[in-house]
Image (cartoon, rainbow, N blue to C red; front, side, top):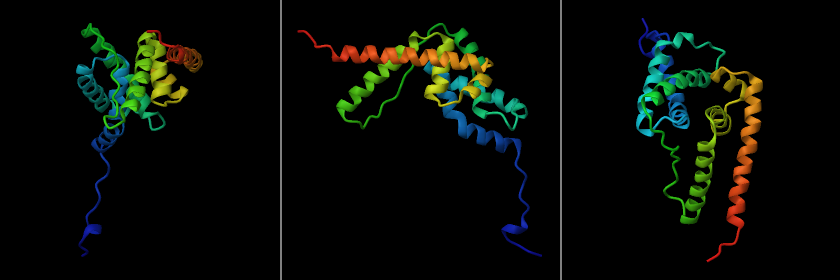
Length: 183
């Protein structure tokens, strides 16, 4: 008889193991995406919890060839829609800053964050969704198309539009900063 670690049979991975890995890998993405979809910060944790409750119940629906982020995002869209319907107020997206940054760097960061926040607030839901998923989260257009249940060409079209709009918003901000200030 052998003893030691090799003698103990290893348990097969369980659904719980898969869920814990999914949760650990994608929790922050789901939370950021919830905020970007306009879920109030005070409700974000509840929305994230609801997303993962649905995901746990439907874990067998996740195909091995599917993007877990896309799948979670499609769940999030429905959960966020319901949460926003219950809550009439919609605060702006809150972006964090590095507290240890030098003052001039922090000021530049705040200006940049303000431009992004204003830009996102001015977008309609469809364009905001594309901007967040492609530009901020780095998802591919096919992943976004699958997650948002829209045609791939629609994703590319909206992405071109939102990139052009963002470039204009940045150019306007730069022009404002370049103008001499009158006293």
